[in-house]
Image (cartoon, rainbow, N blue to C red; front, side, top):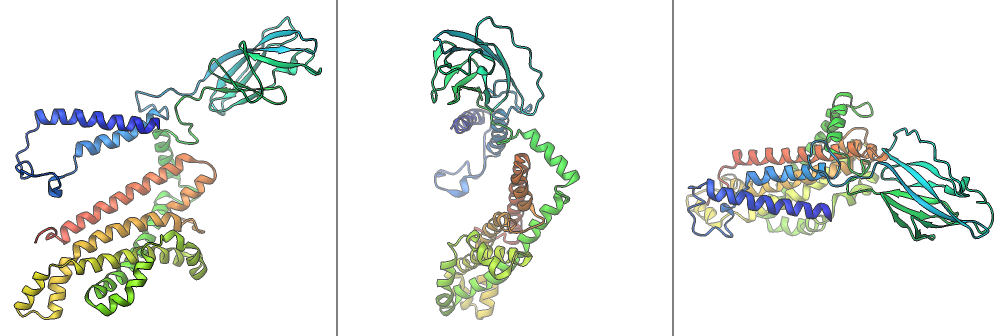
Length: 421
């Protein structure tokens, strides 16, 4: 919730600041600025590049602020680390009370700590010294060296003067203390608002892991091999799905018989997520490469079929009538009217299908894959290597975005008539 509020605050602040300076410095005099009606006009809405840059920087800023990154100048409060102490009050079997001080050294996880000697105490309650790792809790047996602690009726009654009982923790300086059923104290230092590295490592930790794996590989396989195998599977499945889906879509768009025959199958399979087909694919095709490619083929097939069918159905009928009036044959109309005018829809479907395939390949590689981005992520998660998991997710997102950009560029180059009547 705090991260969401911070993100919304950055969005609002950036919006008003950028618009304030834009209205006073930048004076646009293009086609869009001359329009009298822009609300609801898609051609008047273009992505603001400044907003895109600030959006990416905001994500990294929040990420760094909540992980204690050295790249971020501002951080939210982190976990307490240092030396703290609290007092406990004990009551012996005779009903007498005495207090002692517990000194706790809170340190980084995995760090070796040399504990100081506890100060001597004159009563039956003795001072104690112990250590606890940050983001963790530690069991402190403060009564192990108290006089009469084995006698019936000996118990701890208060922490820093506050009454304590089992199940009712007491807040102390730099943490909280809970009483266990066996009379020990469980000290939990303040965790602050930062994320523990095992849950979310800092950006530089992920970058260092990327440099390490790019040079040395992971589990004996280079990073390029992992990503290359994932791309190869995606491209193979997408191409197979396109080779069958596009002709099928054309047939359904041009023939009532084909549409009636295949429409129930396509509409039945369209809402079925590819991940639900994994058990069936394993049974039919095994756990080898063929099974993974078949799964990606099925992920792309129905999308490309529907895109091609929609492209044919969306061709302006006046263009078809104009071609007929000029003496064009059915084959000429197909190749010179229907195919060119349906390509924009097909490219849109291709972008969607490629994205679905790229997202599905991670799940496909969960099944007995030896190489691939998904395999790397799953193997790292078993050892709680969160930095590798996040690195893999970022690489998958970046490559997926790059694929979409390339397909949009290809569409602009191959279909320059898109959007024209």
